[in-house]
Length: 140
Image 1 (spheres, rainbow, N blue to C red):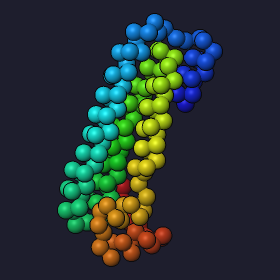
Image 2 (spheres, rainbow, N blue to C red):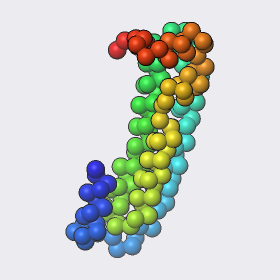
Image 3 (cartoon, helix red, strand yellow):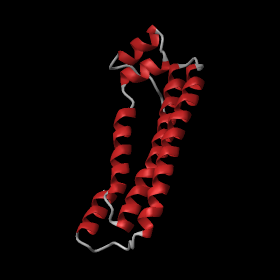
Image 4 (tube, rainbow, N blue to C red):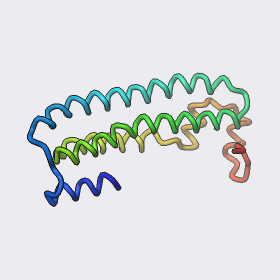
């Protein structure tokens, strides 16, 4: 929503303060920030996944998996917010390309039932429990 509002503000010429120096500076900053956040997201995912696989209880595994994804998506959300703010300041659509890239990563990284079963390497008992639609797997 913030990105859409920023886009329309800049298209109408109502908000842009760039004299060219901001764009040059933020080109480097957003590239580094996006790369660092994506790398940190992937690294923390791998490290957390190793710890989660060692857990015995399915409910604990799924709670930890959910927490891991919240942290992962929070890391990925930072360059989105920053990219939108920089676009608002510079009116350069280039910065929205980073937003689109991260949104694509959100879609690719989204947890699905099959991905959860595969990543957690669930045994057949736990897999059957996850596949049962009426089963209560996690208590919050």
